[in-house]
Length: 113
Length: 110
Image 1 (spheres, rainbow over the protein chains, first blue to last red):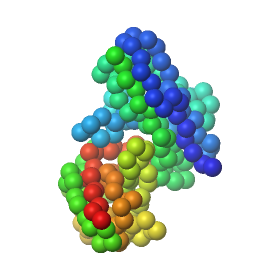
Image 2: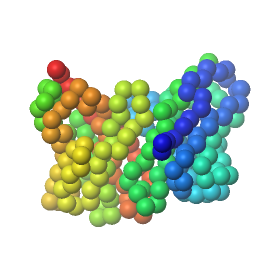
Image 3: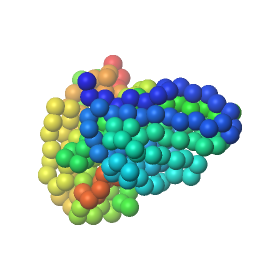
């Protein structure tokens, strides 16, 4: 089954404790991206990647890092999480042949205390 | 970046058609119009997209104004499962970036 998976689905952590949210897709998509969703603000793009070793900032990249060493994986790294990064995070992917159709993961709900 | 404007919320009765409007007065010639929806507790999912002509698929229809400054997503017969937040998004044909706004929350009443 074609899908985007994220782990963990839920995470509660403390300020300053480094964490990584993994994202993996099995559709051989070149394009992957991370979004955060906050009440009243819709989805905002954090980082995106056009292909392996190619990443770029989205609208709200501060406090986040990403890497794209393999086509299927696109982890989101929070080196020193802060409470304002408490949010619902979505990973998405798409192919160059169908850029209009992004496939989204199920989301990761992160709480930073 | 070109922006979209949608009503915050709309209501519909089950089995009736729903017309969800979107204004995008600053759309450029290379912007595609996309619609996604987000069901409760799920990630967004693709609904439909178009450039200039009206489009139909199994989920919905997309009606695009002749000047392309507005569009309407049409659900022909709303079901309770169509209750979701619907996002109208513009995407430049030269890149994959999508800017989601706040969307329209559709409530479907039985």
